[in-house]
Amino acid sequence: MEYPIYWILMDAPELAVDPAGSTLGPAERKQYEAMRFPKRRQDWLLGRRAAKTLIRAVVQPGPEAMLEIRHAPGGAPLVWVDGGPRPDLCLSISHSGSRAFCALVSVPGVQVGADLESIEQRSEAFFQDYFTSVELAWLKAVDEQDAPLAASLLWSAKESMLKALRVGLHMDTRRVEVRQVEGIGEAGDDWKGLLVAARGLRWQAWWRRTGESVQTLAACTGGMDKEMKFRLERVK
Image (cartoon, rainbow, N blue to C red):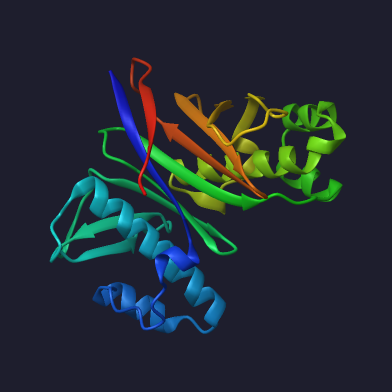
């Protein structure tokens, strides 16, 4: 049996971002109004709109249902429907530039992380601060033309793993590791596999490139005895 991980990638124009935040619930509106900078507000609202589009497509709570995305103490997003939490839903949100990328899973014991990054050059100091010796060796071995993609991909995969663990960047990025990357030199925007490891847990992870950005997904199945199979389903 394959279990679905639903995902969505949307541009700001598609979201028709409403600066007034008219679809926000009370807790979200309070957070939105506390933000000082317009760019931060726009990015945050873009992520909320994408996430709610995803949730409505997957959960189908009805057109009048109030959806809110609140936060756990560590900052991970929590889905609320009509004033109550939905612990059966694991949501991850990322945004970069004018795009939002979100993933949702509703499988007991499975946690998902999603990340979106622009492809860019990164410094040697950045590598030393955030990557493990295994990752550094892999970076040195890739073709020079693929170096910006490789570095951005590694960083994004780490972000996805830390989000799946529900800790974000509160944990040292070197405690999660990318050990193998499929298709780094291949064309196309199909999802490709990643071999990742952290805390001895069971993991599956994927990556894809679209234009000058890279997206990653990581699913952690905790201490389950058997390995689970997933399929990635896009919501438009």
